[in-house]
Image (cartoon, rainbow, N blue to C red):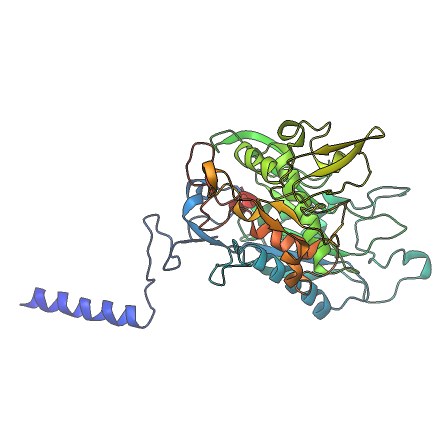
Length: 428
């Protein structure tokens, strides 16, 4: 009787705990305390970029909540103003991670960035006129005796000097602070964003990343890394894990930072860091025009600088070496950062013509003969995002990313298997 009574008491306490939220509703087989519908990253088992856990649980992850280290180098930009710029970009990225969110109000955001810490690196007192340059502070790590090109020393972010600015004490080491590499390796920070100005005194790269390399089966290649961003700095070390560093131009809207991050996605594909991703993104972005349509270039980026046009909704006219060519039929897929499906030139968001595109049906194989359905498409598709991601290519890129195979997508790979959600690759 005493044993039965003890069991009964334990059952009562268990029920009460569940009613009060004292015990998670979902204790996964890996020991993760997660949401009721699936796994969230980071978690109690996996905290850091490039953890094997991410690739092993890729298909189970329901949301990623990467933590940001934000640095403000802009004199005159208050903490509140910097916060607002960061919040606006986070909101645009959150919306862009809702697979087919433009048509599915129930689509869940997959990316929900969290600010770990914002560091004010501005000058307390105004700089002399000879040192103001473009308005960045004296702590901005400028290239000594800069003449042209990139003027930001990325290696400085990884040193002891900046560790003191980050201000995260090293456990058990009085007076020492964790470096950027240690913050990333401990899973405290997953991405770095810094606010700065650019102008006649040069600028940083838009978005760079030294990324862990993987093989065809998504296994890590030990010790191998590649430059996988939009450009890259030899000063950024490989710290054993992937790390993306984004420059946010403080004078522009969130859409410009979206453009920079979009180029990093293109850079990841072009780098071959993740062959699976390269295989399918190349098709999505129209980086295979030479193979698909036998054009003399692989993408519209390499078209030679002349405008293209669309004589009909299913044709493309281009000029190569002074000679005009027409491709018929021409059906776009997802296209790229600079080129919406009806773009005539880089950055063209205004062409109102109708073209046919499979962007909203990428690899769904939902048309005749199991081909992707091609539908009439115009730039009205992304007008709803003009406020959310204003400036540069932002409105287009929110919509563009919503068409990446994402959470709960129904796309299929070459073997007919469910397509992997592309967004976890950001933190491989």
